Length: 190
Image 1: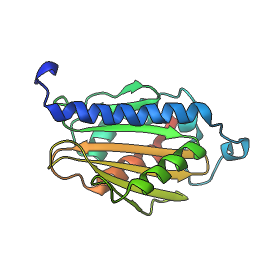
Image 2 (image 1 turned 90 degrees about the vertical axis):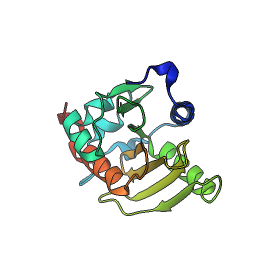
Image 3 (image 1 turned 180 degrees about the vertical axis):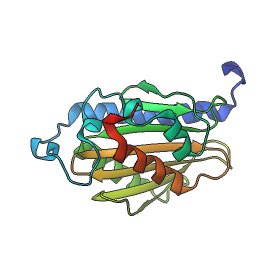
Image 4 (image 1 turned 90 degrees about the horizontal axis):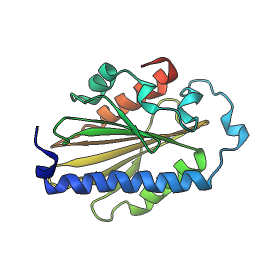
């Protein structure tokens, strides 16, 4: 394991990008409220507990299941600022899971759609089972061969956001697998 002071320069940009995303989410979440009608249970959607303020999203699935879905040997998740982060020991691959009220999630999706085509960012709509809307965002993660992908999936109870970074390629099926695991598992897993 490389000591933290010797981490590659691009790692700092990755951490800053995640921190910036989490900061935007925190500010937007504080300003938005989830209407009571949206909090109603939905058939086929993720468990409502995932959208409860303060719920530890690291409990949304087992570490074994996260490793299998994400295709990497991640360390145990860390819950920070309303998001769970699973990272490899070398910090070159990771998953960040967060959830948002509908208003906040849709605002983030709109922001990324507006950035599509700029600074090597692409955003496109994709199909996700039971989601009313889903957006896949692909952006650089530092080194030319590294990619970050964000997957937003809007449901009646809120929006789930899965961010993944990996060296070389990052198949979209991994993000969908993690999202599928989280949206099915919810509160019952540890």
